[in-house]
Length: 130
Image (cartoon, rainbow, N blue to C red; front, side):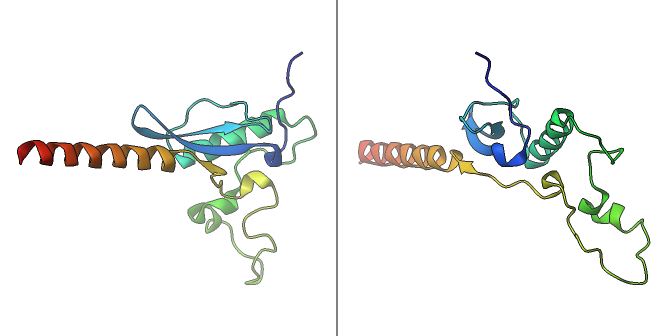
C-alpha cells in the first residue's frame, strides 16, 4: 500500500541534520519518512516546500506565483500602500508565506559528538607528548 504524501504544511517537519560533515536540511512527513531531497540552505528548504505544496494543492489557485511578494522587503516596497495603512497580514495568509522553522535538530547532537571526539583525541595526543 502506497503512503499518502502530505498536502498541508502542518503534516510536514523540517529536519536539520549533518551528513558527510555538512549541515543539511530535509522534509519529512508525519510518519518521519523523508519526502524531499537533501537541501543545503534554509532558503532552499523554504522554496522546496512552497513548490511542493503548490503542486500538491488540487483546488483553484488564485495566485499566479507560489511566492508571496510580502515575504521579500524589496518586492513589498514596489507596491504602493493604500492611504498609508499597513496590510492586515504582514507575512501572508498561507502557511507557505511564513518563514520555515526547523522542527528537529539532529545536527546539534552529531556536532557535540564530533567535538567530544576531537577533545578526546587532543587529550590522548597531550598524554603521548608528556
